[in-house]
Length: 299
Image (cartoon, rainbow, N blue to C red; front, side):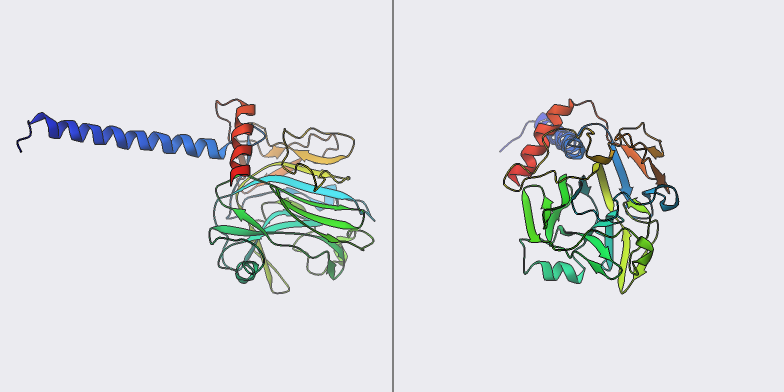
């Protein structure tokens, strides 16, 4: 069959247009995925050595001695797997929230208990309760390249672990979480941190390290925020109230290294080793919330 000379050119032109279209769609999808559910900016962590800190010498601990009721929560978006031996710290101090990748032995064990893919991280959370004790933890799946709401909650003799609309719960008979951190022999650091410690820290055959991804809307409260029989995914941006101990929105301008606490209690974080905020795009915040919630509930 004879093809006119212009048709190959037409095919090439169409192919180029199609490739450009795919490229633009890819960019659009990446931007939609990266929007924080709360809108505005978020904390960006490279998984190498950047993190945010409340220095213990200046701020001490967030929970008072004998605390039995609390919620620690955040929106997180994992990007890279941590090294095989690393417990990647998302939030650290009296309450530890962290994750391991598919090369870690815990990942293999978790597959016996939860629905877990090789592309998922295993999320874990616990509270220190004494020099050699903690509450223990449950396994939750944490997918990469997606926003998740995570929370650790204690109330009325019960502990609850939450990731999106998935939760687990156990009775809790401890007097309260640890207050004198100097007595805890295996705590990686007495400072309150987000994203790690700037280096690897070894404690009792456990190596703590950095989390790679985005963190937003970190809230520390002295009440239980969630009823496990109700909606577990926040439907709006967090606002401070009388039970908010600390709340970080990370909506500062790019290049800022001080991340302000909106609770009014003055727990302003300091960004270390180049940690920064970013994420503002020309999209309505409520549209972004709708898209993100839909993605979480579908998956």
